[in-house]
Image (cartoon, rainbow, N blue to C red; front, top):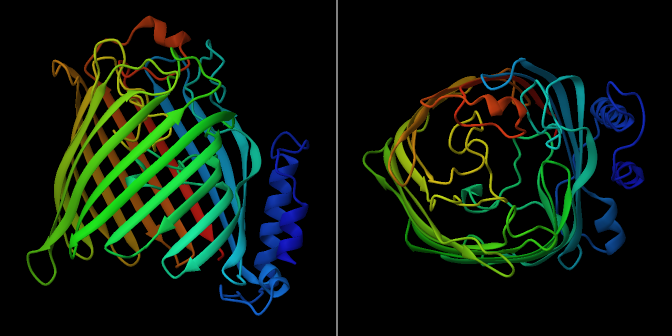
Length: 434
């Protein structure tokens, strides 16, 4: 039944009622129907034949309701939004390791008092990417060659290396996905290798782009709990000009691990260095990346200090179009584009994660990477209340205070200027049925 529902839903937004969208109503209707059905969950397993494998499997269903309030000193009006995102997925069982995965995501605006179109230059409201969209973010065939090695063919999300350089942007209403092939070898083993090649990419702005994107990743656990990782991301943006969206390659080396200091506490560390340079038709100048940090961790709480530097040469900063931009460098999204002089982010982070409630508090100080001129500071706070294992309420605050003068030109700019102070507040309700 679930497979039939999934395959009949269209992959693009469907016309309908403006407030919610027909795609959103269908997704919500299916969500409620599945919830009320009370069907037993099938666990992934090796089936006796292909028919059994394709018609049995594991469903996935979640719903998120979010309100967002945003106030940017560079815009005359306060932004307000109410939106929902529902996800309906299915992973089939396998036969001889072969199976498929589908994930349908429907994002709809329930109330919009903000700018969701990056081409609109003169909006009085702050910009946030939250368009109406109904699409499959995952639609691939998988082949589990053995317990530790697998291949994927088709549309898929990537969640790699802390998602700093390649990430799906799960925080957003619409996520990034790719079309191509990927393989992971020796997963869970001391030596792990990931390779991917992709020909199309769709970003959180819902625009699909032709690309030629190759990923190489290899990690080695040289001691229990201590890992060395090397990565290369080769990104040829076929349909973009080299001036506005340059093709580039990013190469990184990372060392991380944890050291037990007692039966309840352990010390985590991270050191990562990288370099970006031109690739294919790109003319981007060489820029560097560096992050290091440490944290003391217990089962329910932690305290850490970190520093991340994205370089710049005075003309262009470190370019990271495929990475997870939120929540890196603060949650207010003031540094989604690296300044021409680069950015150095130093922050403290602490948090608690209990059985029913939790919190996280981060404090950032931003400076230019080349001359350490003050850019701004930010306080981020998150509060979680777990009503049950399936229902989570979350409140988040991002308060960015600029150390610069907010230019008048910010009122007619699409992108958010880090020279202007900004406050964002999110209220979320997340319900996971399966």
